[in-house]
Amino acid sequence: MTTKKKPKVYVTRKLPDAVETRMRELFDAELNIDDRPRTKSELIQAIRVADVLVPTVTDRIDAEVIDEAGPQMKLIASFSNGTDHIDVEAAARRGITVTNTPNVLTEDTADMTMALILAVPRRLAEGARVLTDNPGEWAGWSPTWMLGRRIHGKRIGIVGMGRIGTAVARRAKAFGLSIHYHNRKRVNPATEDELEATYWDSLDQMLARVDIVSVNCPSTPATYHLISARRLALLQPTSYIVNTARGDVIDEAALIKILREGKIAGAGLDVFENEPSVNPKLVKLANEGKVVILPHMSSATLEGRIDMGDKVIINIRTFIDGHRPPNRVLPFR
Ligand code: DGY
Image (tube, rainbow, N blue to C red; front, side, top):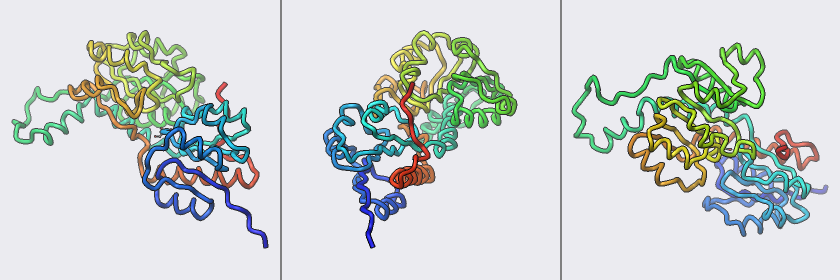
């Protein structure tokens, strides 16, 4: 009896135990038990010898790394929904297939988007700090103290009405917000009817008319600084902006400037332009209660991470068996 050689799979970060156990069973897996982020030269070293690379959003798999791939390297099975950290075009040129883990983060990400939509106007983070930072100083309830702004009855403008944008819209509707959206194309009429959603072909016009903006589109060359300084200037002074997609969809320096100048009411950010470093000016604004910032944790649930791991494994298995993997990513055109 011949036993098929297990593929050499290099995993760049620590994954949930259940996923790592399954990977050890199925593959010749090199895991990252201590979760130290891999350096560029370690990634290059890995791609030279592994059959499959499993990176995450914290690894920059650019053309320089991909060009070092050995002839055996055929699959980059990313443990991520987004693939902006991978040069998919360069991978295609080298005949390397790229896969991702769509669908399984939708509800978790939409939940946290909704949490930020509530947290900023209702001053949740500020309120929570009152009792933890200076518990003795709380003088009790007062009619004019800690006033935020009402959510119910306001208009939300969703930028990017894909799976996550639609899941945010469902939640927002349940909170009494009216749904407005901008997308490359209009969603199907049944979804529009269900959400009673208004489609805006012009992003500019939508931004000028909504109370809360939720950024839910992927990072692509076309969405880089989509929310530019010019577009931020269209927002109403009472409006809020929430971003759980990717930091570079918003011109962060311009956002900081209009927040500082009081030209919008606040922001809720789970993602940043230069992660993991966060602009100290944003931290200052957070300390002043003008923004709520989270460390890229919208999708961080154990269930979600295990589902992502299952998808990675299915993609690898299907590919190794000679079939097209279910979550193949094509170069952006
Ligand atoms: C992804 O997988 O793209 C997410 O940003 C992780 O939270």
